[in-house]
Image 1 (cartoon, rainbow, N blue to C red):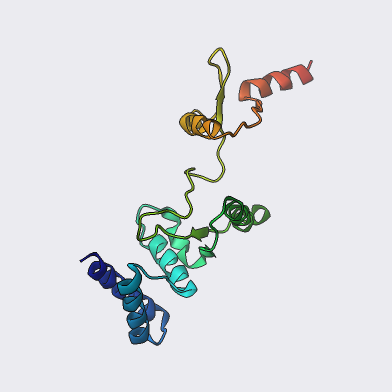
Image 2 (cartoon, rainbow, N blue to C red):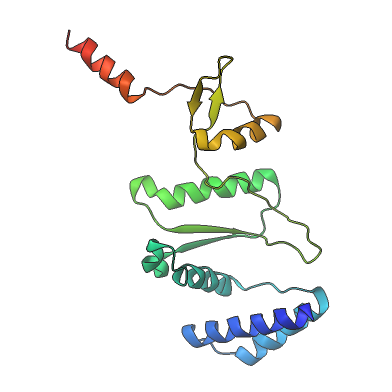
Length: 182
């Protein structure tokens, strides 16, 4: 039952992909995908299908104003990254390519999906790649982003320490300016 539903969704996706991109070979690809699903419970998108699917998902997300730029989405295929080091390296490449020294480019890095047995090859817990942590001192005074308090505690429980750098607040900056004008 689950396999039949997956086959139906896969065929629907493949039809859209072949129709919108003008690719030939739909019948052959559908046959390959059906065989993969029947033997493994899943199938693997080609690189081109992955790019198309990512762009289509962004294009069809009506809650995202950036979707107007869906054709320019850069898709980085890192389904091969399964170790902590390879995932970290992929995320660093993602940040470099997405920011381009100030010229922001819409970028998506795709890791391997959940396997049919339910195991997850890669799990990224952060909601965003770059956020400020939230540290508290013995008095309860907080430094950083309070929205990240729970995640910071989790990271610390896993061994992360952070640098606890205090960045100047607006009040600090005003005080510095007043001191310079004396």
